[in-house]
Length: 72
Image 1 (cartoon, rainbow, N blue to C red):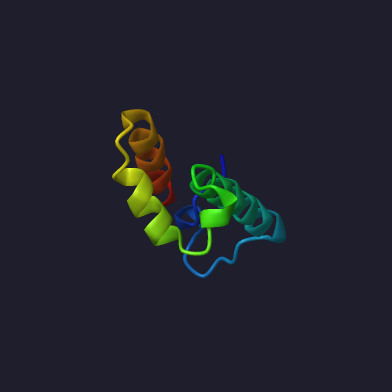
Image 2: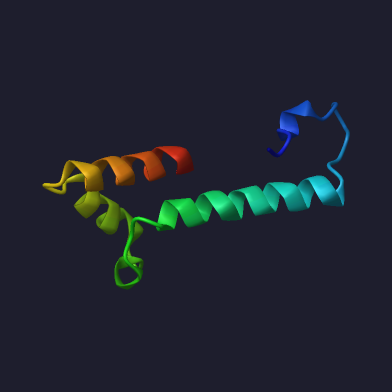
């Protein structure tokens, strides 16, 4: 897990390693955010998530809700 930037002391800048770990963490979370959305629906993610979150299938709704909540 990436250490939170709040663990830095006032005035202390994160190292290049810390910055890269944060970037990798964000990329990983972004991939999880995009995972429920079919590639052809990724042009408008809000619309795509709306569709998934209002699906008739509970498993689809739950998967989308978990991915959305993790991103938020």
